[in-house]
Image (cartoon, rainbow, N blue to C red):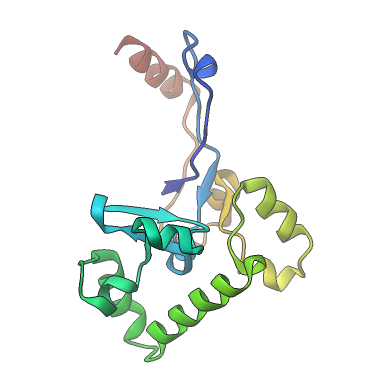
Length: 168
């Protein structure tokens, strides 16, 4: 499970007793088209990193290292094996998506959850899942279509975890 990043000003998280539970999860299947790598620091980045400015500082589309043989990316290697086995044009299609997104900013992923929600709301129902990169955790748990079964945490277990966290 990959949760969406959240920013909190120090005044919020520095408060005694503050806690936060993630409610928005990233659809891992959607990572493929917008996953970038920063080999100099061995980091991955997800989202709208299509501008030339990112390439200039060393952030590349995931497929670039394979083509240039400059770094090894285990996620890309796995995806190429997994998807390329059945789709011989998988790599070409990935590059074409990248090129289209570089040329047309409207095709790039939303920068915020609210922006994504707004875009999705304007789309016809069948096309929504193509751009819905994140979803509320309760919707994911309710769908029961994935390989993971979700169960609610009992109130006493939640209190125990909260107590343990505050003691450490």
